[in-house]
Length: 299
Image (cartoon, rainbow, N blue to C red; front, side, top):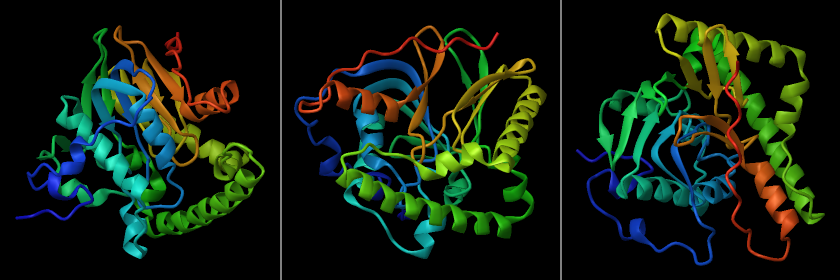
């Protein structure tokens, strides 16, 4: 039976011609990582920063790529179709990595919950799962989960979650208009929603409570750490005897979590690096950016 998804013919077992299109000329050498985690891309929404994500994916290669939920925004697509070429290109890029040997694991989130019935199956080289356990190069075991199961609003009051999604969607639409104006004045991208989230007391309290709940669950599972997304707030911090990692998002912050060859972990702020590269060479193609030293693990 054919499966109708944005991955199209590739999931049905065919190899579409676009999968092997050549790389754009002049791209910088790729950074090599052992593992990359990205989440909350929200393909199918106007808030998705697909172009920046493509720039990140073209600049990195890894042995394992974890897509930690909310990759495709099914909630928004049910209300109206929005799928520009850049979103197709993100899908193509991910499938191309899988086709060339990268292990790609998609952890279904709440916005792409339509993928949850397919957990345990592999489509086009992409493994679908509800959660996973990752072992780092230095032997630590990390629980990989999207995180919506620890969000009491999503878990216990689904109607309220949809209401919050409506308000958040409005913020993102305002963000699109605001950044269109900023581009006219040659100003860089800036996230209104991220700015407000960091300054609203209740949002800060919620993030703290969410992190504690996720870390508690990781302790119960007897793992060394947990990697999640969901709340669009990148973070690395130790909570008790568990290290909490959040890889952020590609709507507000444009961040990813990486593991180096020795198991060291770091958050990559691609928006900040992109701005720095543009400032360094405003009239040239963005040059190679050396991999920064991974952030120290919490003591």
